[in-house]
Length: 231
Figure 1 (cartoon, rainbow, N blue to C red):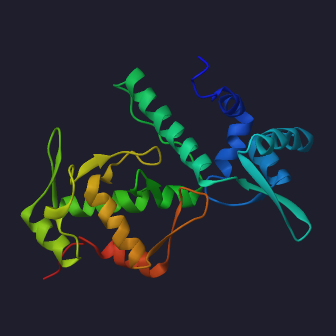
Figure 2: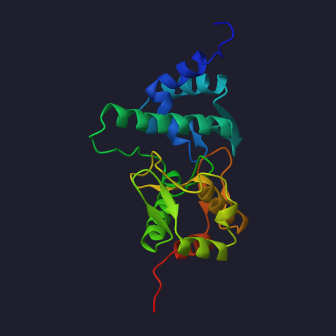
Figure 3: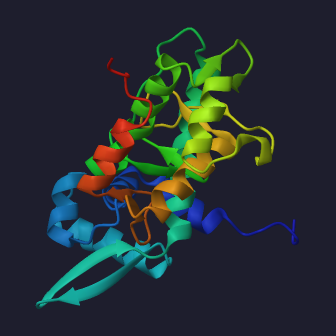
């Protein structure tokens, strides 16, 4: 037992639903006041301050003064990653317990639902839309146990500078995150596409968050990928 990592302290901080609600509201990388977080979590201002003190003291949140106001934000990227992992485990556990039930979607800040990091590739609504277009355009094919890149997909991706023959296995796989009921593209190809989007300055990382910021040009370019070809 002495060699086991001491995770019980952090687990106890996350076990309180009101504290979890405040952390969840900050997952998009934003900074909020204690009053805002109190309203979001359904707490009195005094109770919110007490909970925020525990989260700050535990290293999960940090505070900053901006124009005379004290704001709170997630302390570091590892905190967001840990909460994200717990959200994915929550959804996966629910599916294992009730495999015949329709999967639910966790409500999260809009930036996280739109575009987010998911195990090194693009997740969220933007990724789910791209997956569906690639499927409809014949770039990828779904099978019962796998997802394959077609010859057409290999050619189209090469035009983008992504050579699937050089990618590690699995090249492509279906991935579901807690923010979407529809799949998005995982595997080495999913990671390669995200790197393309980052290098093209279409997408940027939001500090200390799993959210990704997509500019107007990036939205247009990503939505154009695998779009229906007009004669």
